[in-house]
Length: 220
Image (tube, rainbow, N blue to C red; front, top):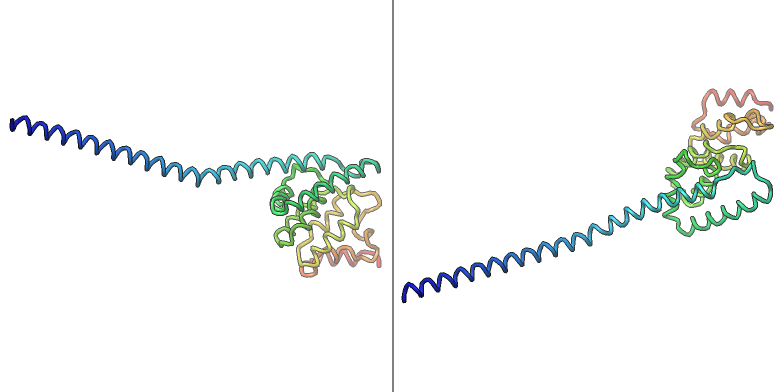
C-alpha cells in the first residue's frame, strides 16, 4: 500500500511538473507573440514611410519629366500658353504641399537628367518656398544648367542679382551668360552697356581681379 501511494504521489508530481512546464511554455509563447506584435507596430510605420518616400521621390521625378518636357524657345504662342497653364498647376500643387515639394525640389534640382527649363523654373519655385541659405546655393548651381534661350534675360538677371545682394557667390551663374551662344548677346558688356551686369550679378565681397578687368574693358 505504501509503495502504491508513493508511486501515486510521484505520478501526480510528474503530471504537475509537466503541467507547470506546459503553462510556462504557453506563457513564454504568449510573451514572444506580444513582443513581436509590439515590435511590428513600431517597425511597420517606418517601413511604410520609407516605401512612401521612395514612391513620392519617383512620382515627383516623373512629374517633372512630364511637365517640363519642352523648351520654350521652340514653341509657338499657343503652345506656350498651354504649357504655362500646366506650370501654374504644378506651382499651385507645390505650394499646397510645401514641405514635400521643398525637399523634392532640392533633390531634383541636383539631378542632371531633368529638362533644362526645369532648372530655372524649378529654382524660381524653390525660391518661393524657401529662404534657406543652403537652398540659395542649390538654386545658383541649378540655373547654370538652364538653356538661356528659354528664358527672359531680365528674369535670369534679377534672380542672380538677388542672390548676389544676399552675399552669395554668383560667379558660375554670372559667367553662364558667356558660356552660351545667344543671338545678339556676345558678352556681358552687351547685356548692360554701362558695364553694370557683372558687378550686379557678382557679390562685391567675391570680386576678383579678372572681374574688375572685365568691367573696365566694357564700354562706358
